[in-house]
Length: 268
Image 1 (tube, rainbow, N blue to C red):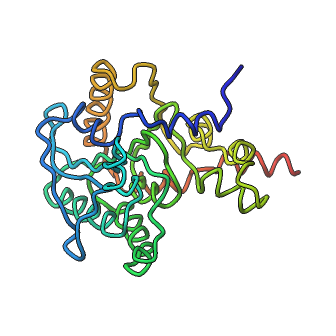
Image 2 (tube, rainbow, N blue to C red; image 1 turned 90 degrees about the vertical axis):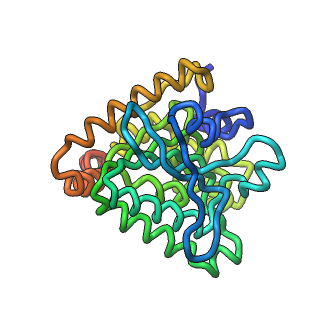
């Protein structure tokens, strides 16, 4: 029996799936974590700092969910507050100043939607990240390693290259949220998943991502070694790429254009 889109959602949410810090420890060397947004405070749901990969100094930013119940509560279950996105942006601007490429590791059901987050400008923080990342003068590589939920994920994915693990998902809304809005019934999440086109295979066909990363050996040393090589090679290629900002602009302008043409042809 073939896997459904909702099976992918459940795999992306598995408790034993590696989190952002697991990837940082497994792939990068000499990680030095930096804290705070210099406006409000530090958000434990977003981890960021300096590291090296393949001999190249980089800024790495990850959304961290935690593993145990205590860790998950402390990390707000990987749902960043505005200060988390502002911390990420501060680190990206610092990377630009010193010419360091940026690597983002994304795993979130979405940005936190609590009252405090809204009062502190959640929407503005996400919008500022999108604006600033679109013009950042250093390479940006984003990898969806689990859930990629709505603007909470997109705020770290306005990149030159976006990769997804094969069982990661990327969607404008959770299947449960979509089902609740469309049918007033969250139990129809499986049906909603099929319509949302949220799998890595869907994202690749739509031109939203450039690569699907196999994960049969996920969490092992072999897996991290393979991912380190892949990231290192991509970063080296991006460093040599001229006109990075204009190419990034063209990348996003072109997303879905072929699909739109197909839909128009079908309607005709």
